[in-house]
Image (cartoon, rainbow, N blue to C red; front, side, top):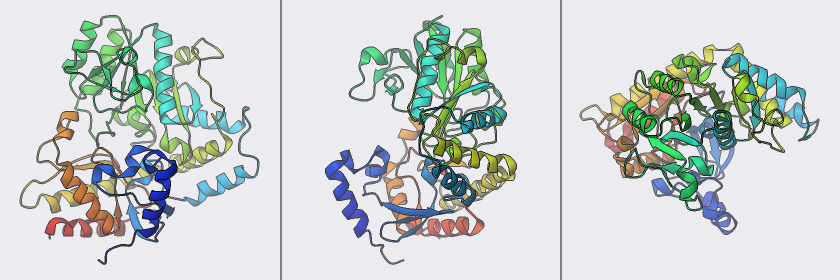
Length: 431
């Protein structure tokens, strides 16, 4: 294939760097991890995205998950256009807010009441505050490699051992604040038990991505989520499922349904907004009653429940609820893609390890099983960078980081999967 032209993307990136830190409004977009500059996207339709220079790509980023139906889905666009004519924002209650909340409750009954917010970060931050307010305890337990947004209390990682207090992983987050967050190892029940033993009666909640998807896709080991449910109940702590990524993707009822687990609080985002800025958190009524104006846990937002975002969210969920065969289709497409990559890349020697849960997947450049953060950081990141660059140059758009997931949408058809595998065959001369 002839080398692609990225002149406009290069120009826009240089201009952006003058006014925007690093030239991007979310760090991974800078593509530094894969040693290249980003492409600037002009438009998207179905399974394809198009950059400023007119290059076409089969898209496996899907706006980091929201585009489960594909880009610019006609029904969603029509509902958004209709809502736009009535005004952009009111700062007052609307009918669409309770309709969307009711739909979330239908899919995830554990979310008896729901509070709408604008982002996954807002949802998880608010869920943690709620857990502390409800339990009257200060400590939160999270897992290395699980990302729950960029609020101060969750932007931490483990110190030298899992029994140490956390230290901040970002400048600007005081260690005195971060120490209220304990960090265990994902898929390691013993590390969780040890923390509960050490901080007996002090842990308000465990927050977890039921399928870790921010260090690449890491499935929970058999029994791990059940263990978290059991130990939190035994210690009068809450279990928070961060389903910002898995919500409405693994199933209508998200990971709660997929794994048949009932947490105390759930956060959802991405798909629930249909591509617009919207997220939510919810749980049992007695827990949610702690939130203002009913209780003394404060949380507010000028744009929360925005009428344009709720219109997009309702339209997206209506399609998913009415056509649940979509889940079978995207899961099967992801399986065909994952199996195809496995066959190509590991034909003579094991080059990659692939994790997949439903329509979420990751290709790790390692011969070992990947089940925790330590396994992820031992992967060959330079090889992934070469893989990314080759695929992008040949019309396949994947995440510019080994630590991000690939997403399959309902718009990806058999031809997309076939063409993707044909490109992968050429990578590294494997044919």
